[in-house]
Image 1 (tube, rainbow, N blue to C red):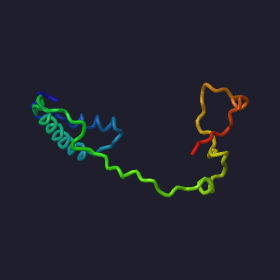
Image 2 (cartoon, rainbow, N blue to C red; image 1 turned 45 degrees about the vertical axis):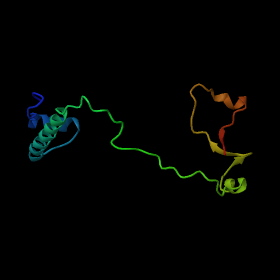
Image 3 (tube, rainbow, N blue to C red; image 1 turned 180 degrees about the horizontal axis):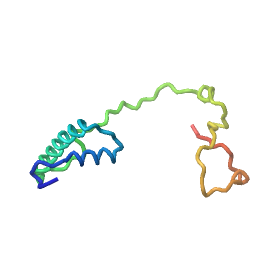
Image 4 (cartoon, rainbow, N blue to C red; image 1 turned 120 degrees about the vertical axis):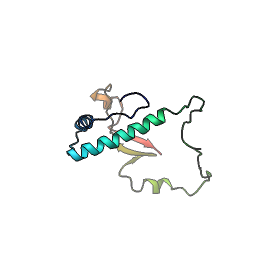
Length: 123
């Protein structure tokens, strides 16, 4: 790219290099078209960079954001029996599930110390 306010140069070779890095195969016609399109995009970016924003307050997002929360009202809940009805295995008030995360600092004989092969998730 040349000076900040000049039209950016984007040669056909630059487009082919970018396409190669992106693992894209372009025809000669596509390379010529992209050269023009990308040069236009870079010119627009230069135009945006020229805008004086020194006195503009930064915004975390482009617009107001508010949470739309429903009122937290008690409702119908399932009994423990209904909750566990489709569970293949339960223990006390826990779902028994297979262990899915291996801890590198726990040795293989951890079950000898009272730990189960499965981990329970309390309701």
